[in-house]
Image (cartoon, rainbow, N blue to C red; front, side):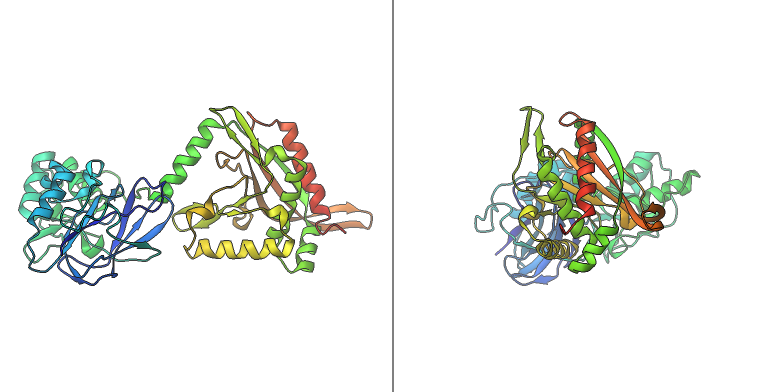
Length: 439
């Protein structure tokens, strides 16, 4: 039975998905539950599995193409099965542009429908495939070599006309992504003369731009990096935060010799000791353990200390939340943080792991930073930056000693709390870190 492979919906907040890879080629057989593609949403990566046995007959979304949940990705059917009705249904969803481009949905994903599969058993759009944690592969759209050449020359004044070098299929069509074809028309480049560096040597948008630059004598584009779902989400949220919150940062240098001593005694990391100190500080300054709703003009304080801990991963930064830190012992904080970090680094976290935060800690000290301005994670009202450990000579009762120090950078929303409040917060944190184990 034939059916449309559709972009799955990975949670209620998902707006679009990006195709990272195809694991099978067009005309390749697949079995039920085989992984046929891999996608990335704003918050996670997932695999798309085949619903039934068949052959991947059509691909509508190339690698790097983006579309909303329910958008057609391809068609799976029997090797000799008539799929003309399904193709007509998909093309009507994608609109006239998809037909003109040879079926690439990347230029028409705003028109992609979310109705039922007409010949796929009535499964709701987005439910035809199952999604799970996943990995890599590839495929690219094709364009007839002669049509691509004529179209590019007509659109851009015939700027390019060299010898064909692009990879082609057995029937002579050039392998090129929809974005490459669009850029070729804009820049007047013949895609057939561009060397492809994409999947299966297909021509990408960056390849076209490099070729155009070489012909015009302008600067050469080394690479064009488009935002992925994760990177776009980070940009949107931090842009919103910086536009709306009034960011002010206060720095304070703290002697952390007691932190190292406590970490050694308890067999945990200094990060665990700092997190416990932050939680104790939030108990003394609950106005920082809070969120702010500008529309409702509401400053909401919370009992639990749900600490977000920024973790650097491929493609961006995620902030999983360590819940109710105030109720945990130092050993429990260490165990929970270690397990949480491992899930994130192995890409096994869920949307629930990223929600419910009341305060965030971001550690750039491991990268050698001396000071920075962390951006508040909305709707929270503050974030604590941790910088690198430095050692300097200080005068003590025993004479000159070399002691380790860390500068903490507290960014707060000045609409909600004041600079004096932030200074008092850092003073309390300093005091808590001088006696982490409460001796």
